[in-house]
Length: 453
Ligand SMILES: *Cc1c(COP(=O)(O)O)cnc(C)c1O
Image (tube, rainbow, N blue to C red; front, side, top):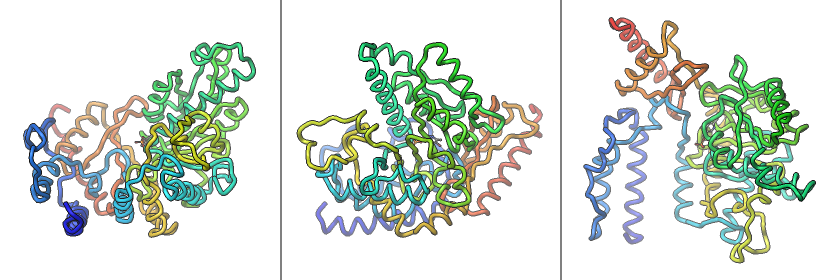
């Protein structure tokens, strides 16, 4: 493809994308295909000879679309939202064109610098404490990670490295392996599975703190387990609190947990992957009170802030904690300006992801972003049929998803199988939710009148 054809095809692709998104409502939200469907539709080997662009494009509707779950359909109510906006799509195109790998400042100064400034902009929108901002001489700062899972892991690894250093500083005779075997991390019993996985990857124990009747971790419950563990010779070092849990959007009481973590020198990380976007609205900001006790804070603008995947923003109070844990200095990364993202994350390579934040923040403005949040504030509902056993709820979900009109996923909540209903698409209007509710009610009534129930 030469430049002239790229100009033409690029415009055609923009039209295709615009049509796709404009008419997405008419596509079936959840596909009908069976596992392995795609292999039968395309050749077993890559083509020997080049094909034309037309050849490729005509297979989008034949091969790809029949197997797409349309996350941006207004009838998609599963998981959590994933962001999609035109400014972000365009910025991603530019990022692809620049195509830099911003692993150091010198590898592309604009990539590193825009990211630092965007994280400060966003940190200010959230009214994060000053210590989390880089400013021109602050000790904190933010970085874009790919996902919340990575942020949780990075924080855990940094915490592990910090405690090891502290203990070995006090007593250089201690064995590192012995210390690591006694480390213990904590989270809520409602935390996302990625939190437990971070401990697994980090090679440390993790304990789940039981939650109260609102599915929140309280200070007292945490303190009790902490004391038991210390008495048993364990070394508590990390707490991952959740603001907006995945099953029910519950908020751990960080105002209670935070002071305990600070007094005991535990690293407090906050995972607000979904709910974090809401904190740009003054009326939701109180839910973030207590963040001043945290060492690190993370949420996903790629969920609810109109910045397409992947964009998970993470702030730390003390960036030397993170840089200290991950720093490697091969000669090709050495240069005068060391404040680059490479030392803040697991991979070396990083895309120019801050461009999409810049486009979105400027073209929506804080006011536009707040309006987007207020359109469907913290829109996660958990549905349980009041007459229902777990089996009945399971049967209802199956009936809903096989009808293909809307798409939902379940979760476990206090031992019950429940249906989660999350408003996801930027284009969902109240009529879609009303239609969905009528549809669910109808299927539930049918189910209750079947003789087997
Ligand atoms: C969605 C979610 C995650 C996982 O996010 P990724 O960015 O996909 O890793 C983690 N924690 C919470 C609370 C979530 O809602």
